[in-house]
Image (cartoon, rainbow, N blue to C red; front, side, top):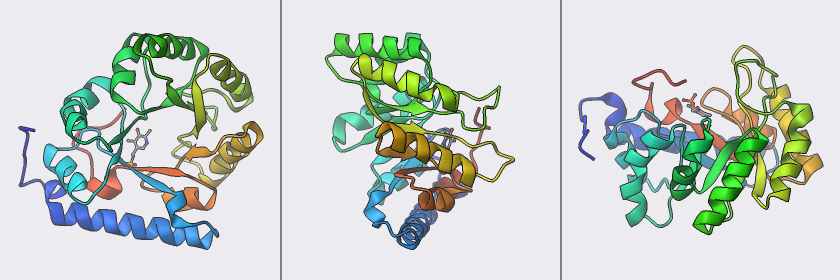
Length: 236
Ligand SMILES: *Cc1c(COP(=O)(O)O)cnc(C)c1O
């Protein structure tokens, strides 16, 4: 809470507050157009690389659900705040290494990036050590992109079954469609796998495509730049 940068445009509260209002309005509109109640869709504010002032501005408008993609960066930003804000909901949306699972489970409410059985086993083991039942989403590489994390669509059922057998709380699926393709078919594929597996949570849609994601059934949209402006550092 020392890195206040009041001159940064993204850090000024009015603009962050306006951006939240705009995003919430668009989410409601897209939900209603799809015949869904707007409270079906949770706005996840992605605060990776953002300034402390931006985080405070989000908290000031009542935002409590946040996504982060790195464990250590998230600890620095959220560990102190978590102690005083019991209603925070923190979601890991970046890759998780097995040697960080204990730290991750201490901080995060939900791990959205379960993508391999080894990680499922590590989470189960850490969960029993900490006395918590890990809540997870399985990340699906819907575009089968070689450089992207996530299980291939055809392998998702086996990973879901393995995670359930380890008594992880598998709540749903998450995806990041290829940047150069229309996202709709990827969202549709994720929704189809979730329906077959009886999973209710669909984390899909980012700043450029969240309205489309809501139309395809997203329950969680992950917005960074639409809320806070461009990130200061490129994200991996
Ligand atoms: C950074 C990130 C986001 C937010 O991206 P924006 O395009 O800024 O909305 C969403 N999901 C994941 C997994 C991310 O890493």
